[in-house]
Length: 129
Image (cartoon, rainbow, N blue to C red; front, side, top):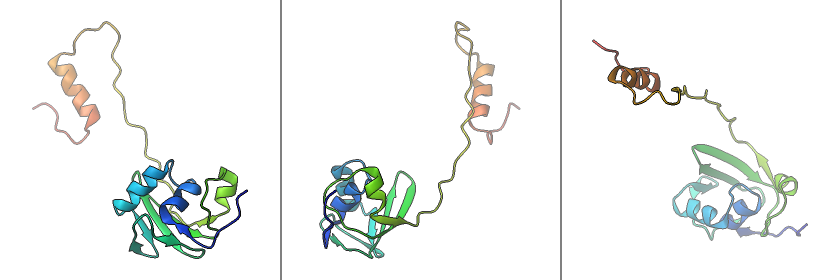
């Protein structure tokens, strides 16, 4: 395992503890303003230290972590989990959407079939008059 450092770039740190898959994703998230350090938007080169709070908004989810150890190199998942304390809200699971299945070889849907499919996709849509 790599020895902990005193400070590291925020984009390198969120990549090394596996909050994002690639360094370029970490860099892009910082540039887009999706990374906050102690409440302030930061650039990719901003330094992160133990005790800092990092908020990362990615894919519709906000991750809130407190830095306990600073790393500059990517480590395995078990070692990465020891480098921060996760205070993220729980993930809300949404039910799977309804999928309309047509029999193979049934041909093109009729106008009535299309309306039924549209109502399945959007339950708030008004029905036929």
